[in-house]
Amino acid sequence: MQKQTISTKPIRSLEDALEVCQVLGMRVSRQRRFILELLWEAREHLSAREIYDRLNHEGKEIGHTSVYQNLEALSSQGIIECIERCDGRLYGNISDSHSHVNCLDTNQILDVHVELPEEFIRQIEEQTGVRITEYSINFYGYRNSQESK
Image (cartoon, rainbow, N blue to C red; front, side, top):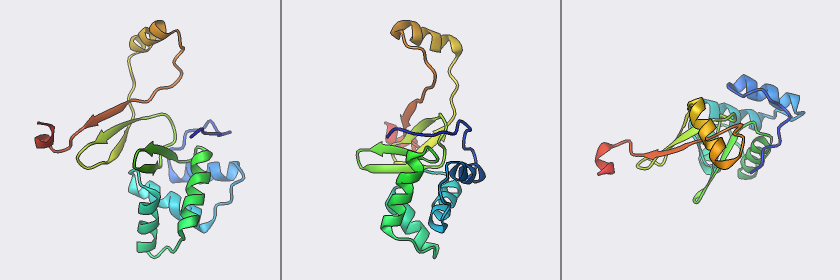
């Protein structure tokens, strides 16, 4: 999914996300605020169904359609992250450049900020002829050491 943001400010807090919504002229409805608050509190990647279930469990009634429409609007504007997986989309609160640790036994995706050495990036640029402006790395592993054997 292509991000179409006009904001270059990284979104690092719920307040930043709400501010970018306003700058973009997006109405911060009650439902949209519920979704953003949940993603910032959860600090993990969730499916639309998990978001729907958690919000309704908390007594914040919201419909399926409203969840999907708000997630689409927020992710298309780069306010939240959308990860395409074979079993569906997952949404997270960090939208600036970062990497992921994919835990294979829990199926969780954890956000991490990794900074590669400048000489490594230059080596990749020389090999490919492409000037690197941004990167994201996916790590895979097991939380429980017995699973990796």
